[in-house]
Length: 298
Image 1 (cartoon, helix red, strand yellow):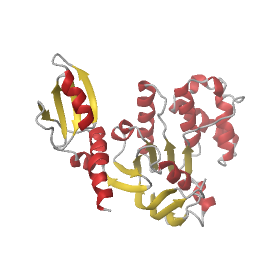
Image 2 (cartoon, rainbow, N blue to C red):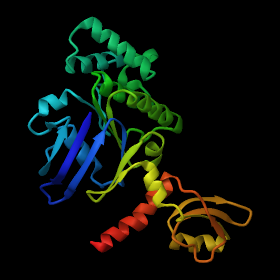
Image 3 (cartoon, rainbow, N blue to C red):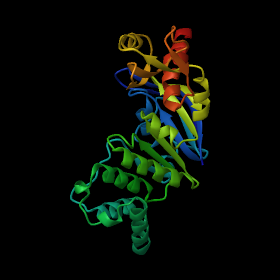
Image 4 (cartoon, one colour):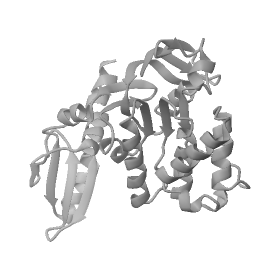
């Protein structure tokens, strides 16, 4: 399975240029789409799932032109939007049964087996007779991924899937997506939560202001941050100075005052040491340095 995006643009009637010449290829496995709010991620997702049309450019899905073959491509898609909705008066099982029918699963025994298997996979079998509206927030997100997967799609697109979940539910959700990604499928995970990408994805893109700013492995982005991440032991006075000078990743009270992690080329003589970056460090480093330099050069 391969998705090829070529010079994709999206301009809204108000003049907002949501996507600007986006070009990239997405292949099997878990693909992370990272960026701040307003970066263009949701616009790209809506185009990929045929809910919106691009202003220009082309998307090929296994060689099929998305605009010319919308019906065929839709049969390959499973989608969990950020604002996932369901029918409040349907029970969990009934809702999945409805979605399965829509996906073309017409044989009753096949549909029943598929629904029960899916409920087991997402940990909702015991809640199959509960009204969907009575589920917890984490269970609702699991129901959302179940409806996206029930037709065994080849492309699964999830938009901000862990927003509002507690840490345990977030881990459960990421583990579920990781298991599914071992199949012959493309999973696109669009998020602004860096931890969702670092825990699951082998390939990623970073978007900002509608532009594709980075495409590659998380490790490649992390390598770009090496030498730019510091742990500083700061006094209370220095801590407030550092806040004004550097992007702070974390700060923990210590005996001397504060232990602070920052992204910077140098730390101006403060007492500290370089540390190995993680993806969160790398993301901030890219946004603060490489990306700012890119805009300056333009």
